[in-house]
Length: 201
Ligand SMILES: Nc1ncnc2c1ncn2[C@@H]1O[C@H](COP(=O)(O)OP(=O)(O)OP(=O)(O)O)[C@@H](O)[C@H]1O
Ligand SMILES: O=C(O)c1ccc[n+]([C@@H]2O[C@H](COP(=O)([O-])O)[C@@H](O)[C@H]2O)c1
Image 1 (tube, protein in one colour):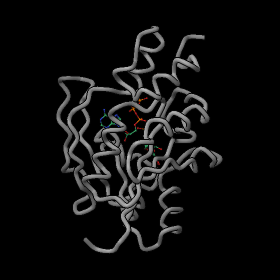
Image 2 (image 1 turned 90 degrees about the vertical axis):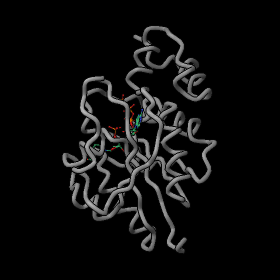
Image 3 (image 1 turned 120 degrees about the vertical axis):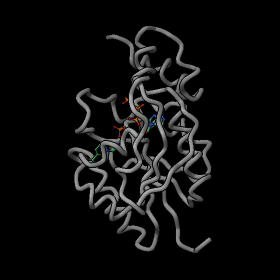
Image 4 (image 1 turned 135 degrees about the horizontal axis):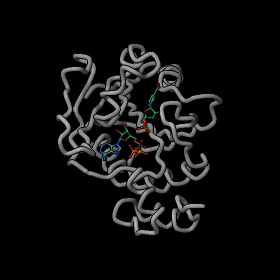
């Protein structure tokens, strides 16, 4: 193994963080041999129509969810940045802070397929290697993930068993007053209950 530091970058709304996020983070650290995994809760998700839960809640839940993962560090820079969150801005900052490191952007297959619509996607692929995990399709009839559209030589797979969980499902169950303990880490389940998150107002 070379002496180049390997930094993973795993961003998400984390509204809330769930068990697939934690499994993906753990798989990325193990399989990619990361020295560090930056977990980045999104600030203003310009690409999502719904308003996200307050930053302070999402930050605290991310800290609870990823606490047990070796080398994982929750980084709140996107929450502190004014304006919409763009991954390219984060990558430029991390590149400037760690000029010699290899940056690996950890994403699920749904985001990899949408990457062409992100701000400066060519710049993203220039700065970071993509580390892509398969994701179960919400629609059983949907075609499987097509890796041929990813930039050749600029991506790696992360092996992850199919986990049909999403934050949307967790919010829907919590809103209906149902138990979400099988879908999120225990600390996150307690946090959601304690702060009455996702309940209709
Ligand atoms: N079940 C899953 N399997 C693989 N990757 C996942 C899974 N859930 C989320 N991810 C990945 O984690 C990252 C952050 O996802 P995000 O926080 O938006 O969660 P989400 O469950 O997709 O949320 P929402 O349902 O609110 O859209 C994205 O790269 C996404 O592809
Ligand atoms: O930079 C962009 O244009 C961009 C567009 C869509 C998503 N992202 C990032 O992709 C990550 C996962 O997004 P999401 O929608 O699955 O929460 C999160 O860190 C977002 O900030 C980034």
